[in-house]
Image (cartoon, rainbow, N blue to C red; front, side, top):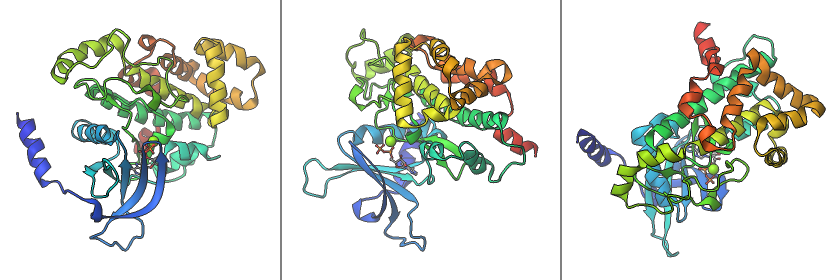
Length: 354
Ligand code: ADP
Ligand code: MG
């Protein structure tokens, strides 16, 4: 009950905004369902040219995205970008209006931007530590950086999943580096599903990005064809969650990101698409894929296998527990975080020692 009072009080004292409060800056992104801008508040025509907020003008799915962000802000704030406010803007004459969503501007770079750089993963190391390390460059050090990124990603996923939310669009473009906390955070809850209350329960599979989507088309099995009404869903969904393991959809996507970080050749769109085709031909068996490509592997591919082979192949072991055809055979975010791959010192541990 206290939680309700808290939420209510918080609601009253939180600032509210409307259309005219914002000055639009640079366009950051444009998808099929909305446009994203960097913005500032009109009432502080700040000395800095660029705003410290981000605005998404969204179409029909904006309502779900606002709902998800509100829930995340209360239940697992640090795993996603800081949500400020969301509202229906229908002062203009066009149709049903748009949903406006406002976040804190977290930083300039997504994981996709950082992975495109030749310097990856050392550019990430610099952003996390704020300085260049003195250790020689090499596989060990790269592995330590990638391990740190994977730990941060899995940590954010674990808190989303523990809240009952499946993201369904995990990809490097939707992982932002927060300059304030020096950690990666998840963004873009537009395709997310909250299974505890049945919001966006029926997956809109056309929203899913085929490059990162797990092979299962629907997140819930076909035995649960329609969304029960909210109270029923609340009572049933922990059971459904156990039965169907919808969170493992995100784990597959996170596994592909792990793979892309280890293998530079798979960081391009065409490289990833080709990999997906090869994996499908191997019936989604990563070990079979490795057998088929390793004998004639380029030096770039060999380097990826070498990195994953460090410490008796512990990285490879984790990767193969994430990228599996059957959802129920994939590890959970929580179990992955307990995997021995993460026993080694990561970057933050190292910086504390120094
Ligand atoms: P879309 O539906 O277009 O994919 P996103 O929510 O993923 O919308 O945002 C698009 C882009 O805007 C992101 O890839 C990122 O570059 C940028 N962006 C979104 N939210 C933030 C934020 N809180 N801070 C900084 N940049 C952001
Ligand atoms: Mg996005």
